[in-house]
Length: 207
Image 1 (cartoon, rainbow, N blue to C red):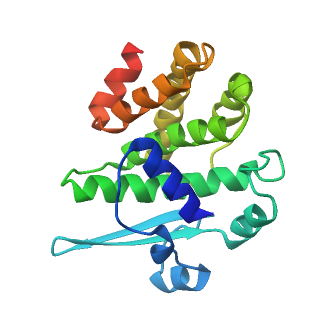
Image 2: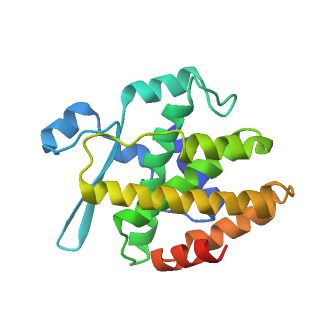
């Protein structure tokens, strides 16, 4: 599932990291050995030393098993939506971070979260029924709760990413989805993907 998501995101954005996310997946035991402070159901672990970056992606094994049983590309519903969003977020982080690093660009945590929120909306939209875009936006950006153990800095970051992704997805819906201009929307998304964080935020305000 993670590899399929990676191929889908890279095709959509017309990029090629030349890496396989499956080679960077770690399990619960491996993450525990790293001694991380927080252990959410999805987590991209990053270490940088002497100009080299090491990555490990954790996605809850139960979520991946559920997605194997209930393939979201066949039907996306309450049985698999939460786990699908978890997988999309992890793969989005992995693809965006590695692609930016390969092009010698810095990436902030807010930039990763914002792009992942956009990727979740677009991926679910394209997997399901585009006529249900408004319902999908409500599920993603209104009917949710933050993890209770987030610190103040993390909470501000997640709220900022969520509110900006909500505004941007509403703009995509208004300009492209309602008019059936999906091909044009993909062109818009590719341009957005290549903007730095400040450019993304400015673009959302203008849109």
